Image (cartoon, rainbow, N blue to C red):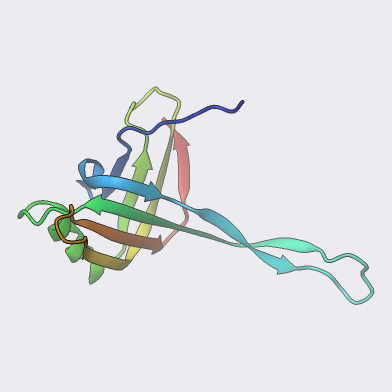
Length: 136
């Protein structure tokens, strides 16, 4: 059986603001494009690694207070690339990875809820630089 990881409070900072208290879900897919490397006469399709691709999708509990999620996020939509960091809350010396990169805010849904339900927002970030990984 594999190791089960339960993340009770991931650390997510964006432009220096700590978004951890708002997180419902966070996903950071990373992939590489596949390039064909076969030539005329080959009997097998060969592949080469192409450009790296990554993004972050954050679903958060909305908070419209003056120094909370909506104010921070709205400023990112029209702004320049910002530094994003995702890591485990156990902190320095835990041997856990930290992922850091520059990102652009590509999509922001300020609210999503049914009648009488808690309001959530979704923020999508796209690569504006290489994704770095370090063990802390």
